[in-house]
Length: 270
Image 1 (cartoon, rainbow, N blue to C red):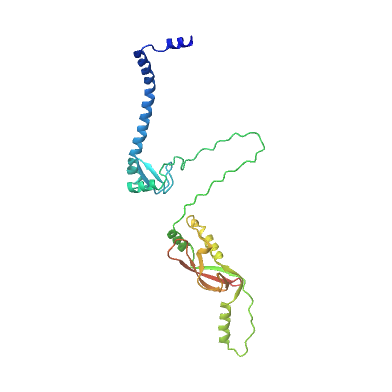
Image 2: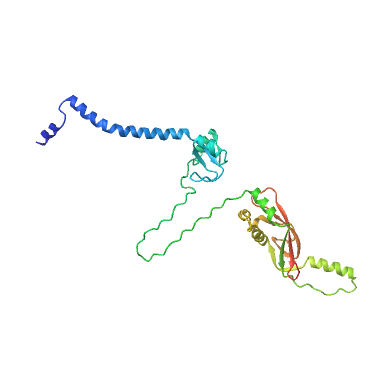
């Protein structure tokens, strides 16, 4: 009985079978045509766009230095006059693609999302706090040295406790000789502790902290070098009173900055 029922529902001739198949194709064809139109529209949009390099942060596009595709009209009429981006030659675009460089727009960049309360289960769960990462735009070595030249004074002062000197009077010495001897002794007076390259770097960082741009200068202890006054075997410390030349040079800079470190006794007046 079942075979007879199926044969009664199906077309019985070739023309009926052709019409039955045509009905199914007509129902499927609009969906396929819509899909083809969507693909063609996306392909045309990709062909019409050009690749540019951002020279400033652009909201909903990306950070400075990113490669993004944009329309020629947007680049010509807005971004180029406002110096937001530069054109990227086609040869360079091919090289970037070969290197695997990401060329795409960041729709979430610079977008502030509203805070939404999250529903949680009524359990004794310790809340977690979101810590926003610190975004630092690094300065070039040349700009860092310019800021150091501006904000670091010619003389950097340090106060230290001097060690006691032998004040035994020399018999038969003239007053002039005594003055010279006292001056020489004073210039070579040892101190308790020392002044290290780390002390100099820390003092300079404190001076830079008063300016927003200068505070971004990255100055390490190894960027400081004493040119005189150090003892043999330890070139990072000075252990006596006096004035000494110091060299300051951040990583990547070509020319150093020379300043004077002055170590004075704590009993001296400013």
